[in-house]
Image (cartoon, rainbow, N blue to C red; front, top):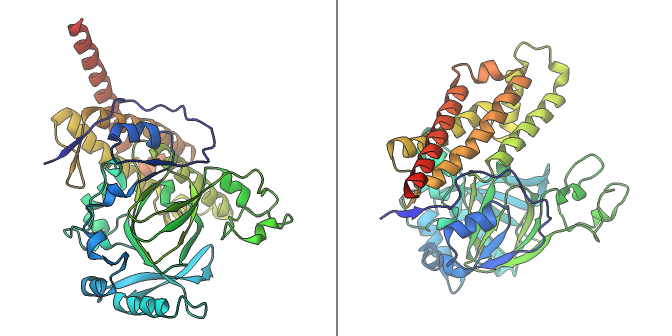
Length: 423
């Protein structure tokens, strides 16, 4: 049976607090969906759910024994698969060197590393960004909590399997493995659940990361590095004024990382986690602004080639490789989401998420209002950058905007009429 998810508001507010949040709430899964939506998603505020939220996940039983990874079970389940593995001791640009391994080989490495008492002489390997849920769509590993159900990104990719991608991952690695300072793809939200083990998180509110950039604008690789104390290189850094959250995530807990928050993460024990990146009506404007900003950077970087006949198209190709999405796919993405919501309002079709949740009318209206605001800005920007004709060659953006405006107007009129009839 589907679980209905509804919110009280149906319009987006562009008034956002500029307060720097430097604390994190610990919350209970007794919180309602609307409370999470209003108190954490909209204000872009982090929180940690206690372990009750994952207590019924099958992976918490099947992948562990005595509160540690069950290597035998993991090899039976996944041993012959190729998995992406990062070497935490090898820096590659501002990330870590990564390669594929057979899962059984990685598990053998992990067991040997534990037996060596985590010797510094051995490699420090971390299995990360593995699309395990996509490979096993019918395996009952875990249930997405209701709070994270409004997930446009995975809704889009799951409905379009030909794209052969999604943003649902499994991470696993021994104590000491870590991920350098970064913000999540597209400026998305993320949630991360510890199936086994503990993590330490450093979370930096938006714009605090600017204090961690060198004189060339490059973000530091390790936010705990003594290199930050080199004033000639890191002129903006001041440990007395920078705001951040330093928190330990316990086994079974889920941490919600807001959009645009930079973070650095360490596994304090042998750890397995499940992570999703996600976008919805609360942060789609932030994602759009991130895409817009990245294209400006690309155009500036290759401005010396501006006389090329296909310069704007080349910029889109570069944008897709650096940001993960270009203007064409972004329009396709929001068109897909908008169409699903329009069909719910107009034709009463159900909008279902993760085969479990069904969105109510107010929720779909909120999503449409968010897309309306983004579409207006998107089309204006495309015109300014001489992209409008190529991206909107069939007037699909205009047609979509008109449909959304008509739908929202008729729904508003309907609400007014219903209110009058009750008086």
